[in-house]
Length: 207
Image 1 (tube, rainbow, N blue to C red):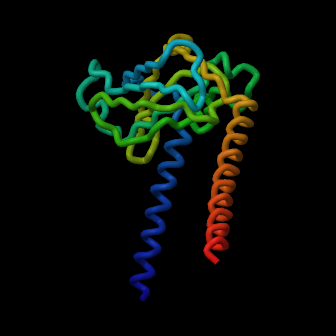
Image 2 (image 1 turned 135 degrees about the vertical axis):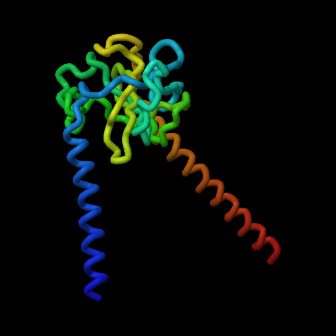
Image 3 (image 1 turned 120 degrees about the vertical axis):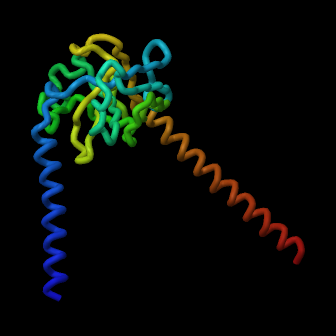
């Protein structure tokens, strides 16, 4: 029994050590310390994009100009939708910080998946709750502790090129959606009521 308790304590301590490594590593990571080793491109229709409707094609992969083995610690890729500087002005809740634990630039996860040393592409439908703003897309490479070790983005270092605008769903659209759902539910209930009434009439006629 004592031996079992000893092993249980060791297991808890090991798990805590792993958690502490992750926490310390994550807290210490600054964006400026990361290498831009991923190449990321984005394609979508021209003009204002609509939340809940339009799609964005995102492609990313390792920049082959880096030495072989540069990506040896990469385990996961996390792709995110990020606010452009113009949509961060006077909005502290979107503020960019060099320490990634405090950074609020990229708040919307598009996808997170295992890293592969080859180009990868996804088609992403803009989420319905995406706010109106100007955006770019960034991908982080994460290590085995889920800590950011590299990145790539579809814009330049100043985040001024290849930006795109998204229009949020308006209150009127939300109201129409709710009305549509309510009408559909009412129609189903009315139809069931009609069938029930017709069935009762049929039974009475047979009597």
